[in-house]
Image (cartoon, rainbow, N blue to C red; front, top):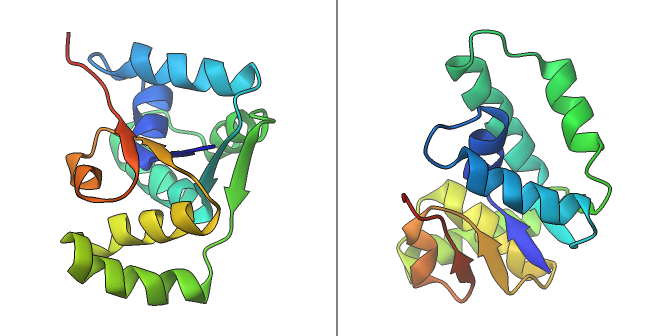
Length: 133
């Protein structure tokens, strides 16, 4: 199972001119049955980022598009994730947000992460990133 980071949703829903097509390809794989997971933290952060970036952002449309991803599991953020994250901040030199994603991904057994954030290269997760070409 793969964990999906915030930037994938922002690129997809924001139709990013550089990474939008690659993010859409990831979402298409999930729509076709690839099992993936993310955190409720991801939804919140995506909402905040898109609300600040997109002129005509609709939280209803955002929720409908996420809900339509049948094979995407949304994990709650648990207190134990915060405890682990505080350890991961130090061990992997991460900020708290990335450490929370890592803690959730490890808790649910994800081995890979879809992300453009190279900070995850310092973690046990295999990062599946984006190319700029």
